[in-house]
Length: 286
Ligand code: 6GU
Image (cartoon, helix red, strand yellow):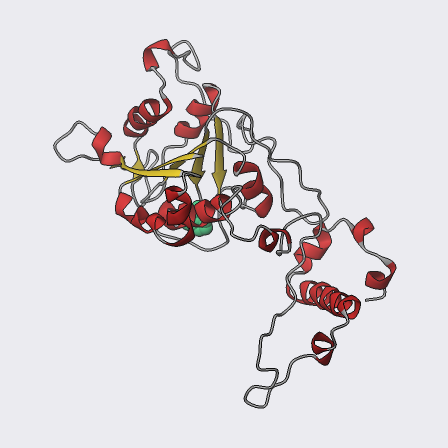
């Protein structure tokens, strides 16, 4: 997998050389390159932003600079491209009405995950606090892409025509929020998505089983049961006795019960999304 990241602070991504992600790069599983957006500016101030049309606080990232950078990285020649209209400005559709990202899953209660799978070709990803939530299903789908290009917005965000334009050119463009809180820019959100995606690459994990057993994966988005290690008594605190019984059937049942109870209590939204046909008779008594 080839990953490009565009940012005005590419140094943010120096840490991708560390730890498991650093090893994955040494092994050749993934190549990560962070680019400085300002390298595609032509003015002396290397400016990447401007005031919002319609007024308001903050600055918005300019489409021309982004387009120079993205055309370059995606190998698109603007001279050969079909324009969205015959030179006349078209009104911008609302994000939901925008052609792309129609195959993505929603996280509404009771609604099934739609497969957010990727086709051949690069996927262009913009972190955006006003976009749908990034989920494990998205991470899984994106781990099958051979090229990801992340664009980090700063300030009040980026011009809304950037994703619209690249969708109109046939690029798979996705916008994601990583949670209901505000960050200063897309860099941290990209770090989060990058880690969630790359750890799923075949050969990334020493023990692939550790991926299979985790929360949010599979048809059952259950939180994990709590884990303990030795000593079994520590500062007056014990561990559940069943776990020391050596009876694997009982241990599995105990862990599953705990996962279901904890998920109901802590994340009822996940239970509402669950395919209840996967629950067995023992689960239903809970
Ligand atoms: Cl993707 N960006 C920013 N700036 N803030 C966020 C976010 C993204 N997701 C949650 N908060």
